[in-house]
Structures are given as structure tokens and as C-alpha cells.
Image (cartoon, rainbow, N blue to C red; front, side, top):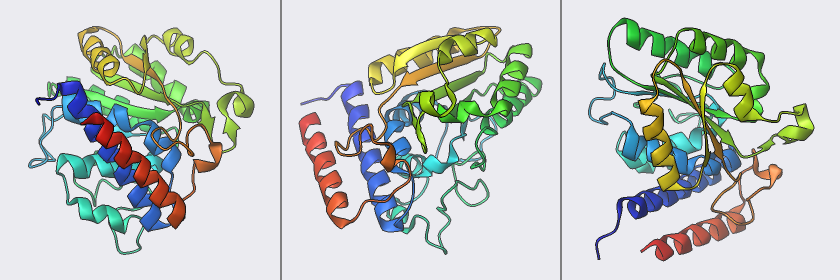
Length: 279
């Protein structure tokens, strides 16, 4: 039976989640919660939206992606492996001292990584620079920047947002992984961050609210963002931290903790069951 495009993307997202769990388990450390919450977003970007070719990872006209929340590298690595940038077996070496797949992505060591990230709040500034350069050089590429909601507490984010609006960067798309949890608790408890959409609107962004786990909604949102002229777009993606693994969902404790053997086996079993349901 022929599967639809959306069904195919759901299967890819499920495989990306499996890669996240395998990476963090084998590395005995890492950040599974926020990696699982953004798996559907990355799936749509890399397998439906972005102009890129794993065989030419440095092609000048390619679209750029910046993982501003760099600690969620397991999601990016799993996505890049699924896309064919490197062998999926390398995910088992995550955070190994001799591996290129370190806790935060390094653009000098990993094909497909456009920017070395890890210090929260800096990714949008870099993305703004990339978007400006694309316009100045008539490169025609779009720039996508994935941020965490807790990351928005950093002041540099809003300085970059002002620059994006001032320069009318309609080739820039910010995606906020709005799972409502950060390392110390909920974003509301930690810093009182609310009304993310209206904040971006006040900084001159076109804003789209979306269910970050609905593949079809994500596709429509990214297509709408491409049509916007004269201003950057912020897609506020409502997500569930730990999505896809029941005992990790909405649990702040899984922000930065590796599963033990029993938890690993349970997580993989759940994801395998999810995959069967998609067949």
C-alpha cells in the first residue's frame, strides 16, 4: 500500500527519535527531552522544506540551519544521519572523547552543521548575519533558526530580533520549540516568560502559532513563511518535552539525563510500537 507524504515523514520522525534515545543511552549523558520535542520540526525542515544535498554539504546556495539550542544535538545528529550526511552507526559514539559527535555540534567536524552552537542566546544573532549575507550576495538561501523557549530569557535574543526586523529579513525563519520546560522547571516559574507570540510580533515579526507535532500543520506554516515579504517570521511550535516516550513526556527531569538500560529498552520498545502503528 502506498503511503502518503505525511505518513512517510511521521516514520522518519519516529526513526529520528530512536536515534536520539540510542545516542544519549550510549553516550551515558545528553539531553533527550528537548531533542525529542523538536524531532517533528527537524523532520519537516530536512525532508520537506530545506534546499540541501548531503553530497554537497557546503554548496553556496543551500539553505542554512542553526540549532541555537545546541544541547539538543542528539536530534540534529540523528536527523543528519537519517538524511545521509554521515553513517547512522556513528550515533553510537555520541559524546565519546574520540568522536566528532560531541555534546554540542561543531561545524568544523560534522558535515551538515552550519554553525557551532552551545552558548544559549547566540544562535539568532548568527542566523541574522547569515540572512543578511544571503541578501547582500544574492545567494537566495533561507535561514532557519531553532530555539528553545527557555533560551528566550537571554537578552541577546531580542537584540538580534530587532536587527532582523530592521533589516526586513524575510529570508529568516525562527522556530521556537515551545515545550514549556527548561532545566530548572517551567518557563513561567523560572522567569515568568509568557505571550511568546505577542513578544515576537512587537519586535516586528510575522508570527505563526502551530502544533509542533502535527506534520501537516508544520508544512503549511513553513510554506506560509516563505510567502511573507519584508519581515522575518517566527513559528511558535507548541510541543511536548520528551514527545514519543511516555515516561519522559512533560517531565523536566529528562531535560539532561541519560536513560539506564531498562529505561532505554522501554523507550525503544515504545518507539518501535509507534512505528508499527504507522505502517
